[in-house]
Length: 371
Image 1 (cartoon, rainbow, N blue to C red):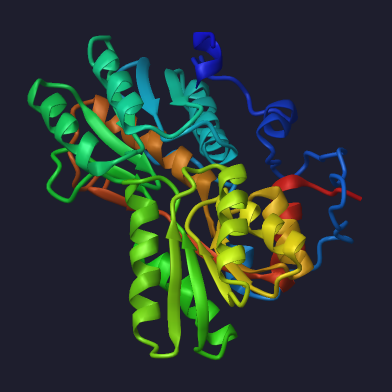
Image 2 (image 1 turned 135 degrees about the vertical axis):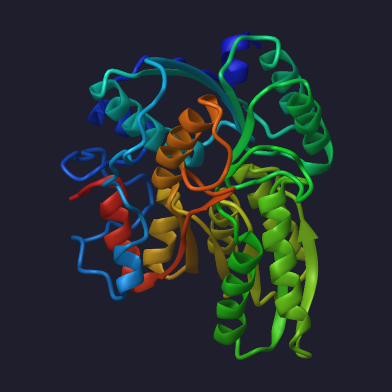
């Protein structure tokens, strides 16, 4: 396989956000329309009714402006690597593009590499970071694939004088010396909240399975731990399987089929990343199971399953804000600033739990009118 196919690679000199870019990543900002229509055997959402909850209205914020910080230079060059090529990180990239465009309007050019493997791998991520630290990047950012593997390397990079931050959904270990983090700081709570919703739906009794995601990924492991702790509170709830799908829809589908074969009376599935709700929903639908699915994020197919009632609820992260804030913080770090008045050590981004009644609104907010 060629190097170009092994990783997603973006090197950008601030470009204006366009409908073409947004359609490519699968997400639209207001004013852009997706004319593609639904896929085979997918239900069509009719219109975009007002959301049933105020929280759903605030789930994703596309309207950002740079703060009043004045950059010290007129050019910056960054390196960002994340767990795996996936539409979730494409959504993060859109926020970066918006911040990049706004910097350019102020006469500041920001260029960056945005790199990841096709399959999540801490070993691959380590190789990328080792290569990146040999180059002349102002800041190196990483969405940590496995904190046990990556955190010690980040400490070494800091000790050697490199400016290192973390971003997205996975921070480094608590004692890591990375400068700052922008992203989800409440993955454990997200897993717990989704699981509480599942338990209430099941009247606090039943057999459930957990699809975790990538081995060692802090966000996935934290959500799974939140789920396990909630299940442990209820004497009539039982976890019958915990499996790792490695961010693969196909593997999540296969794992769910196996779980259902071994547990035909399965009552629920807790999904800890953006891929596994889709794989689980495909398997549940195919098996005509009544198992209740809760999971993460804004995959188009997952939102359709939510609208159709196959998925009970989803925790939607504001990827756009994560990307925008990451670029702002990176510029400040490049200028030699440390966490304090200009930016916090952890920039907290939100997760919103949405239900069937909000699916059409979120779908149209992110993907446009499908007619």
